[in-house]
Image (cartoon, rainbow, N blue to C red; front, side, top):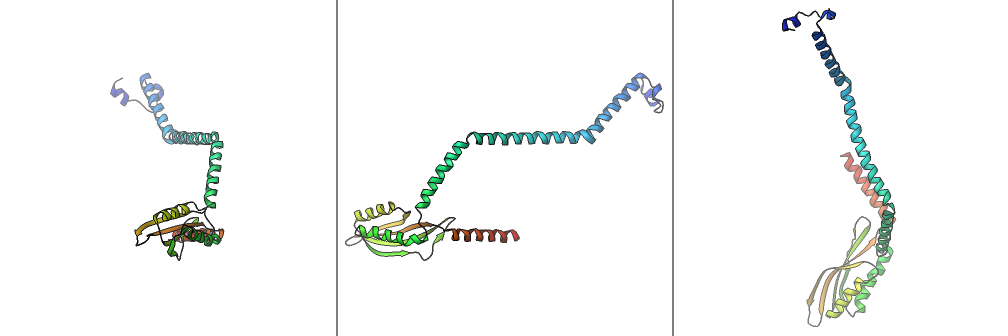
Length: 211
């Protein structure tokens, strides 16, 4: 068919169109239906399908991760038990508030037991509190010979409670050595103190949320 014949086709009388024209019209109608179906319906369905595939992949990954955890559950339980035991042992090395005076006495006795002379034994007026424990620094100055000073430091490290010697400096004197240090002792916070810290944290969070 020539172009002029297409122009002369009567859209109201399709039955009399040549076969080629009818075939082209059907193809055009088919393409139009496909486009309309995609635009108004299939496009959303394809998007939903892609979202479902992504969701399936996420669920699959979650399932595999949980399956791995389930397979290793006994191992995790043993590790958790070991951590709890280790943590419990560390907590036992931290005295409570009522035991702090006895610990300070132990530190003092450790020096006197080695024949050292305390020139200064001054606990800080205030503790420094952390998340679940408090730290108390003690400024000390003791005099004695080198062997006794070393034995004193060793005795401090073997105390049943955690005590550390920090900022150590040793200076020679006329008859003995003088050691200046900061001994730090630690204690765990009691339930009342922990409750106060939790309350303070909540109050702070509320104030920041209002800003």
